[in-house]
Length: 138
Ligand SMILES: [Cu+2]
Image (cartoon, rainbow, N blue to C red; front, side, top):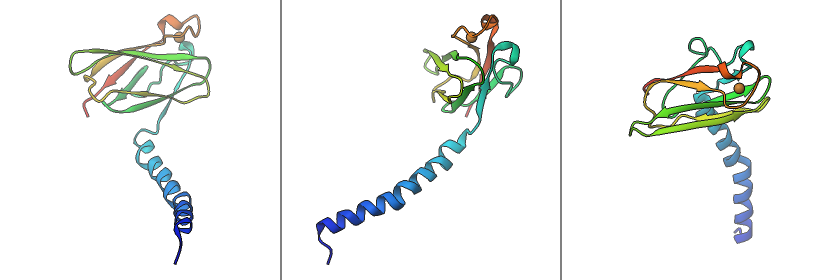
């Protein structure tokens, strides 16, 4: 009959061998597969914001997580969102070259069209680096 130490050792082996790896794979398929797209951002003359849902337009639903990566210099994703309770929320997330940045769209976002700005000086065309975030109802 196994003693207490054996039971703990067996439990640790079981957790590290099966439960944790299976949880990580399940997390990947359930959570990350919901929105696998990584939007590529460039300075304005090379394309600016992605044309995912029209010119310089990105579409999202409340609760979505958007992923961005810069292909050149540091940018930021800045947008003012209206919430369903009437409040405003400023999202300003820096997007670094070669690094995936996640932006969470709140569950209580009001559907509509919002102006995306870049809030980091990225090129001489920084001031026209605008796009549209279209939030559609879930
Ligand atoms: Cu900029």
